[in-house]
Image (cartoon, rainbow, N blue to C red):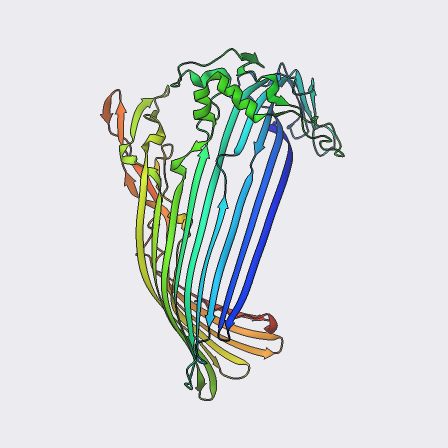
Length: 554
């Protein structure tokens, strides 16, 4: 057994964080309180990874590399010494993932003590979290070549001894290989408005009555940028031969280590910007290696073919990976707390009802799978191959979904003090759990190796359930309790991912004639409306009284 890759990394990170907060309170009259609070946070990270890796196995796209000289094996039969010869290849990687985020929020609250029995409160707030990235991440790979590389783990050190002859530096020959630019920009907004009132009547059994209105809206937008073909300038222009580009400048193509590569100009490579690599770690480790000047690397690509560099290497917007979602809720609620005695046993009864309307929108791109065209071919073994005609991006179309639903959710919580040390509790409620906003994403993909079509369901509905809890609590000392609890849930719907049938996609063309094609299994996130899962549970335990908390599942 031979390790496939041996890789070393130097990671440099520079971070900057700015934070600020402001809170103000004002009492213009004796019965009005005004409060304002705000928060701002900015976080910037410029991270760079400088990596060097050694490929120890032959890849189909790197024939003849590596050429292996001497091998040694340990007692388990695994290779613990390998010598790479005849133009041994070392790959240099520059990886940068800058992070630039801004977050702010602000809220304003008015509280009015209208009378001795009535308090009204108004609250409004807004917040935004934004990650800024226009394709600023980079994953750049160049291939360098030396005479020999040895990787030796015959010693007792934790890391192998690695030597290169001659040492790899900016003066060695390097060939262009892979340049991937990418990034995801995300903006998330939350708006809330709340009006609440508390009325304390002069009634014997009514402790208070609460009522209110709540409006909330959450939006999330994601924009993805990425290179269309990071390998466009690999293999000495092989990707140009079957492309739409008429020509390219091949004057810099050289055979390096047995491969045809665009040789990078000397000014693209810059000396290492770090030293004392793995200082103090026993063994022989690579000396600090060269890195790239990306602007000069990109200018080199443009000199070969400017249009290909702009269209294939520079990050461009990827609509099919981008979307914009929103979820708005409008709620009215009424709640009262009743207190009294039953046969000289004190009780507390909480009753409430909430009516809530939810509206969602989902805007993005999905496969227009009915319009797909497949060319049906056979390989040398007679196996059928399906190839999409044209560019797959051409088969994506805009998807816009609007939906809404309304729920009325009553609830009850009851506590009875049977004795000073024995309590009975019960609660009952209708509840919902709305799906995560990310579940509303428009999404579709096709996998012909498994004959699957995967679809999201942006109009997915919430989980709904009816539930009942019963509990008995005995506090037998100041520090201990014995509790008994049981609950029952009637789950009316769940969110699941699974097969929902088969479907035929597009047309299948063989030798210019339309033929029958396979039906694909159709998978999607679905709300199984008919599923009813009833669950009951019995719990008995003992715990310290001063750590005990009773939790009603409302």
